[in-house]
Length: 267
Image (cartoon, rainbow, N blue to C red; front, side):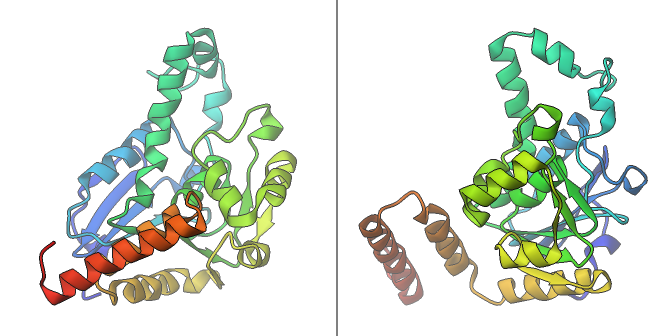
């Protein structure tokens, strides 16, 4: 890249989230290292807004956290009786009706859903702790590059809760049901080597090389034609929900679109 995304004016910079765009690459940065990028409803709303602000030119989105930890999970203030200022506490949520509770959690989940849009490829650059909501935010991305000091952990079950920020589906898809259950039910740490060998992470590098490794991966992704990447991503994302024959048909249809596009032939 000719210039760093961090050298450009941010499109968003609030509530612990900064969005910068450098042509085809967007960078979403968690910006509260003093609290190990702990998460809150305000941060989730900012992440949702970042997704809505992405220009159409963006092809790759990098998610990173400032400081020694990617994200240590939900801010501990959430577990106090008063919760966050201006936000319903967990106690308030529990006392509300089913519809209101479901709608609130669905709103929180929006921060974790847009990373797998078909028109972008998202990469989580993960160092240090990625716990609970931090783990789930890394799982929200298409790809994960981790530093050799990474520590993934899903602690919700240990607290009497469940992972509810869209992390269970990708976790099972990446490591399988049995390992996913064991990781969630025990709350144990998953380090860099295991994360790569189990498919949780694509690559592990020394912490000092994390940013460079992510830049190299982004460049490699950008080398392929955009429409071909979009079609390929859609094929792979839908494969687990299709039968073998349905996937064959989807491949044929996608290839037909690509051939017609390359030949300049309208459908």
